[in-house]
Image (tube, rainbow, N blue to C red):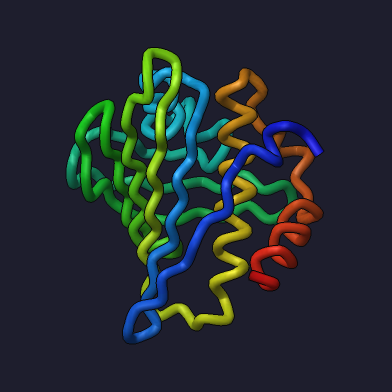
Length: 171
């Protein structure tokens, strides 16, 4: 296990009425705010750890399509930019993942706190561990990308996801 796979704190799920929930992560990142912003709010950055957004227009209300690059099972997801405060907040609401919000705060000159929220609707509670494990894996990819090693999508495997799924199911 690499340092990146152990440095991501576990996320939490807050069930809400009507099969809705909020997933939350708070990540202390050892990268300056402008680097983290580029990773969560630009096509070049997002494609290194999450998905390739194309089309992309960085403004409130703009349409976007995320192209997930999983080896052997790529897919696309349509959405909109639903909050946009450059250098601070990027929020995307998409057809599969609901509302995902990245809120950045500087933590000194070379560190940033990322507060992530994912609002999901019509999601059975039994699916929460899977969603938490999925985001956790991607945040491990994010920490690796910020350290200079973008994720190699041709090496995609579900092994780490299954490890994390077992951990989230036991919590």
